Amino acid sequence: MKDSFDKKKVSKIDPNDPRFKIAHREAWIGVILVIINFAWWYGFAYGLGSRPVDEYTYVFGLPAWFFYSCVVGFLVMVVLVIIAVKGFFKEVPFDDEEGDVR
Figure (tube, one colour):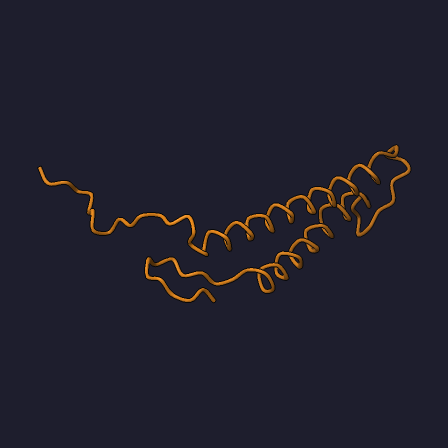
């Protein structure tokens, strides 16, 4: 029976590959963005939403805590992710050939 696993296409993983350093840095940027998103959401949702319902203020028909935590928070996160991707992320080749990392 022929082995379906083509050993010629397998390459050894080099832990010193600069792509790992780039991926590690970009993963930390993602974690920081998640923490910012949660802090924004939690701060507005529980900061403005912890009052009695009859004291709520409304923005565009939505409770202010919901509008600022979910609607504005979403827009802020979209802008932050765009800035992170355009400013901090790098194009990394996925092929095994060694080349310059842009």
